[in-house]
Length: 343
Image (tube, rainbow, N blue to C red; front, side, top):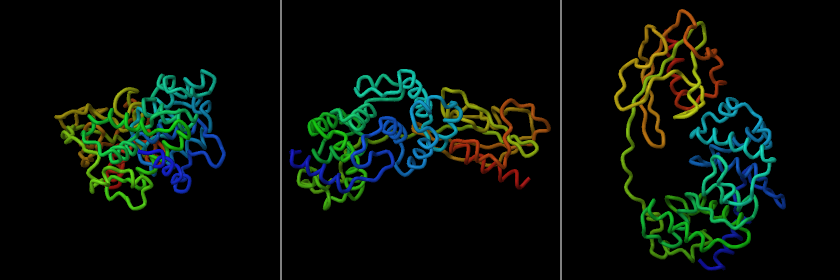
């Protein structure tokens, strides 16, 4: 990619960049806290999903010190529905680490990577966008743009280091934050996975994949292995308009979140295994949910408790939407509420 093409991308970005709530406006300097928060939220998640969460978090906790002082359960509840809950736990840990050190994020990639939840990509993004340091920023959008720009013949994930090196070869010494965001925006809006809009791409004249005639072939990807399947049981135990919720262990899937009681998840789980109390459990269907590394089929069992003896929090059914349940438990609670209405 030539210097002229790099400049063309930056000129395109001035006009066509996305108006995202975490980006600095005009001559305003980027706020490292907002850059960091948005980058953590955007991991494995779409911009559309992140927008309302980002606005909610910055309205409620406008500084890293405010977030560091928040109760962990309160933050986890506010995060509910965004998924990948280890990010929320690392978010709290990182905010407290930064606040304890004086409230300023480091501008160096190596120092940023010492903070909880910050890896190679996130450290580079914060360093470039928030501080203007030269850093090689490669997310999935940039990965796609670079693989097409250079027609990378190796398959992902084996090609990642080659793509990273190629991205480094075209990263300018100045305007690194704008360049990184321009590459991300190009991948998100023009150089899309399907039907890329090559006719309006500022890099079209430099693109090797376009010259070959089929940019959509890139990036090349190795065949995916089948996602394993697991089963589990969840339990809706109600009493006098309240339902039993439990706080999940801090480590593990959906760690630290409120949810319905469940048993173990595995390839072969016996019916009603893991029930929180002896009761007349009635099966109320099942829900399917897909995690990064496995697919889960969760059966729901419902019962009426004579007394509130089981350990946990008895939550008013009518206020269940305020509990901050993860998506899996929202699905299960909808079935539980339907069972309650029909009982």
